[in-house]
Length: 444
Image 1: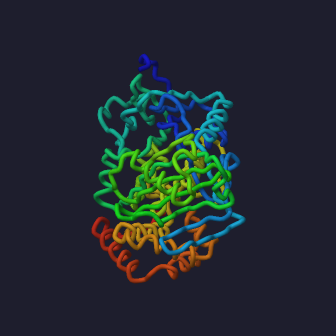
Image 2 (image 1 turned 45 degrees about the horizontal axis):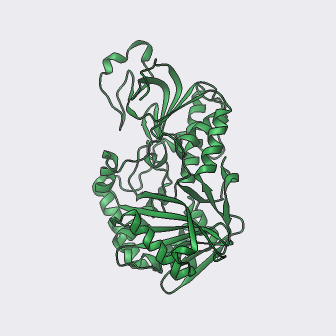
Image 3 (image 1 turned 120 degrees about the horizontal axis):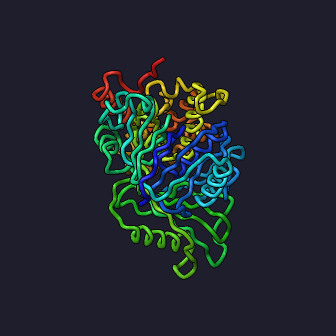
C-alpha cells in the first residue's frame, strides 16, 4: 500500500485502467484535454490475458492493431454449416498486449496523466450536493466552500478530488447492481475459457473463423466452440457456455482438448498452449445507469457497453468514450473539441441510461428472453440468422448500426411463435417493472 498522499484536484479521475478506462483517457487526450488526469487500477501489471473482437464498421484508435482479420465466417449446428462473407466489414481480433502497449505509450506521450497501479478505489461522492445512483452520500455538510462542485474519490492511499469521474471498474458479480440485474431483468451469462495454441502441422484455415460451432455436447447447457485461426498452425480456441454451469477451468480445457482431437485430429501432444484467457460476460437487458450523478459517468460493462443479445463490448466502449468527450466539450472546461459528427450528448445521456436505440433495446430484450427460455432451440435459430439474413443487415444489427429494413429482415428470418411468446413476456415484465413500458422514450 502506498503512503497517504496529498489530495490534488484533477480534471478527471478514471477508475479502472482496462479497455474502457484507457480508451476514455486516450479519447480525452486526443480531444485536447491538457489538465491533470488520474488513472487508478487495482491490478499490479498488464498481461496478455484477453482478446477483443469486433466487425470493422467504424474507425477506432485501435483498429490498426488487429492481429487477425477474417472476411468469411461460419456458424455450425449439429446438422448444418452456414458460411457468410463480407469483404467490406471484416471481423477483427485485437490482443490485449497490443492494445495495452499502444494505449499506455500514447497516454504517456502527453505527460499530464498519472497512472496508479496496485491501488483499489472505494467510495465516490459528489461534494456539495445530493449523490446520484451508485454514489455514496455521507457527510454532505463538509462539502461547502472550495470542494463544492467536485467529486471525492477515496482510495487505499488517500483521498482525491476531480471535476469529473469516470468509473470503468467493471461489474462485480457480488455487487448490488449485478443482483438487481439478475432479479429484475433477463440474465444469460457467457462463461468461457480460451486456449491460444500452436499445432505441429497446418490444420487451420486462416481465411475463415468459426464464430459458433454448436455441434458439441449440449447436455450440460447451451454451448459452442469459437475458433479464430491466426495461421495454418496457430489459433485461439474458446469453449463457451451460455448458462450458469459450474465447471472449473480444467473442465473447460478437457472439452477443448476433445474438440481439437475430433475436429482437427490434434492430440494433446500435437500442439503447444502458449496462452490462456477466461471470462464471464453478462448478457442482460438491465438498464445500466451511465450518468450516475452530474459529474460521475460509468463506462464499460458497468455503463451498459455490452450488447445484451451478443456479449460484444469493444465498439460500445469506443462509442461511449466519444460521447463522454462530446459532453465534456459542451461545457469547455476539460476539453475544447468540436461536437463529434453523429453523436449527440444530450440524446445519449438524456435519461442517464445506456443510450441504446429503443428499437435495438426491444429486439435485444426479446432475443435474450428467447435464449433464456429456449436454449435447446438456440443453435437452430443462430443458423437461421446467419443463413437467411443478408450479411450486411446482420452485421449492422450485430454492431448496433441497423435500421428499419435490417430489423424487418431479422424478424422475417426468425421462427414466429417462440419469438412472439418471448416478446409478450418481455413487454409484460417491463410494464410490471416500469409502467412506461420498454423501451422508454428518451427525454428531450
